[in-house]
Length: 539
Image 1 (tube, rainbow, N blue to C red):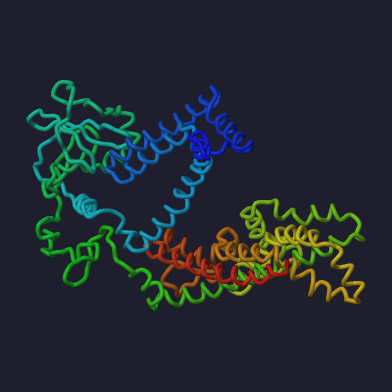
Image 2 (cartoon, rainbow, N blue to C red; image 1 turned 180 degrees about the vertical axis):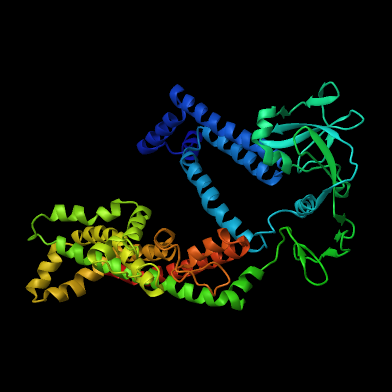
């Protein structure tokens, strides 16, 4: 017969085990104590200070979405680290934040840019484009009244403190039209300072003459009212634009020629004959960049041979470095060789030197006119190692072999030493020859460990920017290509040149190429990893 006491005992939770009590004690120790608390306060104080600064900066630029994300993340971080029960989260939070900031955000932002026309002439908003166009066509108004001017600065941004003919103090910047200056102080009839602004001294104005003379402060919210400019930092004059903007109609009219430029949805004011006024503004264009990357006849040629060379470079680099590294690992793993440790140290020296520095050294050695190889080893020959399209590719593969074989040597040495000697001894007793032992036993077991590293090496060489850029800069240049691309460029260096070199920098197209590269490498890696699963059966 059960009693009430028995029912209570049956419903009571089980007592914690010794390991559970020990884990709880560790968690309490990690969460408590005056020293731990002080470290928390200092660390979170730094984090909160940086977050507060970021909030102020984002608020000034009206980036409300990012501001909200920063605020929410800061609150969550404080809650996690002041809690006594969130021990796993305390270790995971820094890694997750860095993963989101440096991986997820970068990939997401790149994908966003790929769907826009962001690039030279289209790198701002429509309002910024209108302001820039109006400012670039300013002409001084005849008989313009003279405005007293004091050059001021706020948060690194220059502005003009203007005293109009009626004696009113106004302040503005290139982006901010003139408005009433609060707390203005006068020296006679000239406003010399304003609340929230720092007045520049005459010597500072002289040192920044180019910036000061480039200032064009809009007179009002209407861009057609003109802007105030100063030639000397002390007197200002009214300038009006030769362009007239009609916000309701969305047109820009050239007052000198009468040409009307309209917003046709291409991110720039466009005339009927197709002429555009630049700068334009950034818009979303969908998959146009991806379509243009593979269908534009001017881009298709360079894209094809650059892609083929990229695959060839990555495959040849992986194969050559692996087989050379494996050969050396087998050689120096032989117990009969004397001085093996010294030889191994020499083998990894190229790996110890930064790759970009080694590439620069090789570039000097391969110079056609005064390089060490031509002048010393070849007796004054003029072999165009880096200027001939074919030889340049051979040179890159040789240099990359020099840079990559030590890594494969170390990996293969470790993998070979992990293979039990009993397998080789048993095969020898059964009459197997050395080559059969290596091919049928050692190599398959070696690939179990090395195959994932070979895939990673392929992905690395597929995007091996350093070697190409430092050795040849992608040259020699293809003069027939519409983009700045050379015969040794791989996809990643071509993307760099599309985005950051030349007169027209097309960030949208470069981002589209980057996404394509990411998809190609991801697909190849997934397929390769699935193929390597068959090797796991060897274990």
